[in-house]
Image: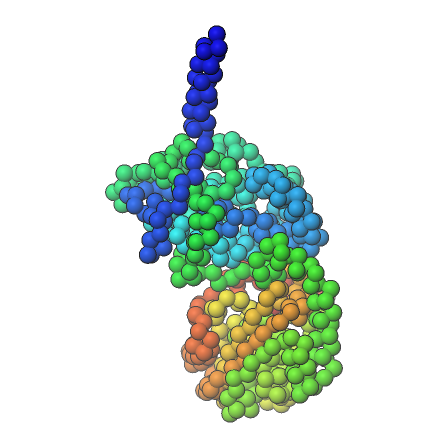
Length: 538
């Protein structure tokens, strides 16, 4: 009797093991390293379709917390970010899948769906900097690739579609449930996602296209990642699956900028660092001191002349470096690239001239009040703006020089937007190009979709903001107007880009705001019976 029982138990045990083997994707040991950094396990296979997990597969990080924290801070506010940080110890006790669901509740609950732009404006930079060069080269660069993620579609799809060149129907991810235009903080189930996307048809289509384009055999390979979401997709469709271990991910390298399928030029949001738990905790601890430091810096700007304020601000952590051309600082017209709200102040301080005025496009009243140098608004009426600038340079309106930012809006990355030729149409003089480079460590002092009145506060709250100001050789404006003015603007742009090592583009303010804010960067202001369109300055 005992032998029969033991035999039955053994058979049952073997049956259970076979059943479990069919349900579990075993983590393979990391493949041997290649001199070119590719994942050899995938690179050795013929042309095929890749099924790639985003978190822990495409992305090097073993945690999704920074992405949800960025959403909580940028879309929900500081209190929502603080709540998510306080819940972090409890999140560590949950599994990967449950932790994502919990973070989605905190980050998304109550947000307006139509107003949510963090996935398009703020997250792509953070995600691109975390992409594994090895996985991108082996899975996404040379194959049709279907990306799978347990994170909400609103977070990952804009990044995958716009920056990695993936079609919208090649992303398998859950949508956030909504009610009356607001997110409920609950994600779709896996079965509902698969029914809505018809993944079977999607993968079959990718295989057919791959076979037609490259003559491959349509083999589907997989790159696994963190958690068990959508694991049966890999079991059902993949001939081989590579599941990287934590040690393998540590040996990966970030995707170089030159490999980006689409260059990252525009991004929004106040947070200038990767919001890991430790970094976010440091930010919250810094906020009271940062606010006091910003107040001290503002008072120094307002109350003291440049001869005293510049060294005192350096003692308060505002570092700057001047590369001067003495013959160029005496001119009256300065054209600089646009990095932040303080660009004209740094140009004026570096030149040692308090008589310089800043031409602005509808900056906030708070910024105008706090400015230690004169400001005057441009109206986007070219004739009126040209006359106002000419009057300033010729001694009217208070006299003195003028600082203009021909880009019309800020650009955080090493690119220059197209320069407006308005400054070159004044004629009869010279313009001094000024190359500006800024660096911040905690907060960005610009925004396309936020409250612009807080721009100077956030910029001055950085522990050690830094600026490099370089005066270049003057450029003759000639007679001004027409093709000659456009040639001068292009030459000024080229010289500034060459000095900074930046790349010139033909993009404009309108392109930036359409991408980041969903509008053309125009604000309508009612003044009595009139309505004017003023350009946001960001």
